[in-house]
Length: 305
Image (tube, rainbow, N blue to C red; front, side):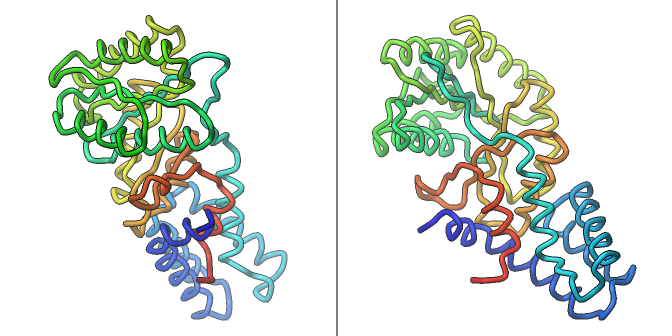
């Protein structure tokens, strides 16, 4: 299955509701009225595209109507173009190793899919010819260590793990040493889920990052926040607080196939200026995909099956 088709399948719930609402607005009124613009705004906000992106799309629709009139007004195409233009303004690529080890810290609240994302990302890197390893630094949830080990066995990725309740900073330190000894290009560090409102847990995450930096100056080179798309715009506050505590370099958005609020990808990137680097559109290892703005926008506003 090609990337566009996979995205279309994953974004089907968001796309179906969004395009249906836009087309309903278009067909109901022969003119572009304040009422129809209000309905269009409600449809865009309903898909969690956010206030700023919605305002940009409304402005672009107004401008097109003023210059082309109703006959040339393709609202779906205008919205797609605005989203693609905005998303294309940041670099979604994962930092490449420069002759040494690149450490990627995977962070987020409980239940977003960090452990699974860490394993899938390692799998994707290895499919690109890179040597990747995993560090089980969620030592508070015993199942997380076993889960990561099982993923490692399934995907043939080496996992460095400590004991249950071990110091996660010590595990991260040892994992960097092991990855360097094996000549790995990437180390994916699966950290414990933590509420963004718990200061003590955020301070612990900062400690893990400090220890990594002491072991390998500059580490972690990437800090990716994993967000659950089904939480919609609630994820925005999570992103804000994590970004304050440990400066983020990018986002991974999971469970896009289970929500009608996939527009939150656009809203969060627009507000925080953080690139979305990967998206999850299914449960299989290959369903974690590098984020590509144009196919994403096309799938979000697709009018074809």
